[in-house]
Amino acid sequence: MFKINGGEKIGIVGRTGAGKSSIITTLFRLMQPTGTIEIDGIDTEEISLACLRKQLSIIPQEPVLFSGNIRRNLDPFNEKSDEEIWNAIEKVELKSKISSLDSLVSECGNDFSVGQKQLICMARAILRKNRILILDEATANVDPRTDSFIQETIRTEFNDCTVLTIAHRLNTIIDYDRVIVLDKGRLMQFNTPYQLIQQGNGIFYELFQNLTTEIKNELKQMAKMAHYRHIKNDRTEQSLIIGNNYELID
Image 1: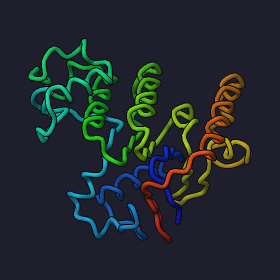
Image 2 (image 1 turned 120 degrees about the vertical axis):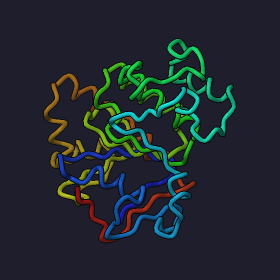
Image 3 (image 1 turned 90 degrees about the horizontal axis):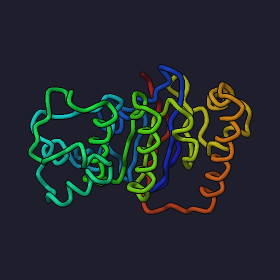
């Protein structure tokens, strides 16, 4: 069993087929776990599907835009004011790209770049402000600048939220509180990035060793600072618990 404290930023790494995406599908109850998942001590199997999913926001690798206008894409349930929607657009720096909330989005959002579509998904998550945010390799197809901006936005706009990030770049999660390392559907390591580097073995360490010396030195320093910040922080306002015998199979 492992526990994720409320507000923690958790990275998830592993080779292809390790079970990373299965964490997402089981959280959303798209597949049945062999063990239990609890949020605030409540088994997710005992929560209605609508209530469960209302607590979760996801930004997937392939951004999802709906047919219709900008307003519907950012506020599909028509719950927010125009001012709130524009504030979210401004926070993701898309105000110059969007002239009106009633502007139509072309099929598959082809009038936006991949990075801009991800920022629209980020604005949608900012508006919903759910307790748990999941990023499923959300920056895999964007340029480094957009990747960096998305990570900074997560730190500022989702500071009090629990964030789970499936990552393909170590720099994306190197300053996270802890990292889950999966292999063949099983949890192999769960520690701060700095401690995973210091252990000198495992998949995370192998990925780290594949980097250039300059990048390794930079990331190690970032990981060290995050490690001591994590020790000082005591996040207890909510929790996400993955129970005994839980297996993740892609």
